[in-house]
Image (cartoon, rainbow, N blue to C red; front, side):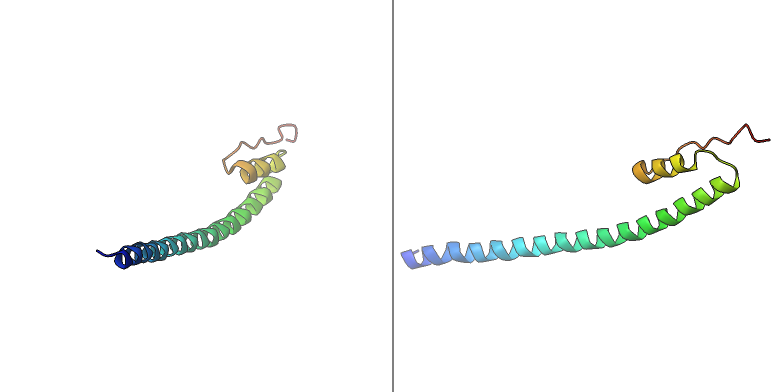
Length: 88
């Protein structure tokens, strides 16, 4: 291998590495966009369900409806509702 070939080889390797890097970066960015779209859809569904929960809490005389929604919205876990035992 002469000096010219030795210089050309690293440049070719660099070009190949950059192309692979860009391909991987673009694939990662595409996955991120797809995930964000799916997450937005799920968040919309959660918001609708949270509104239904609030409405059901109002209809069933639940005192802690906002606590339930705050808990659901912040931690996305189920919480306990307490019925107002004073109203009979």
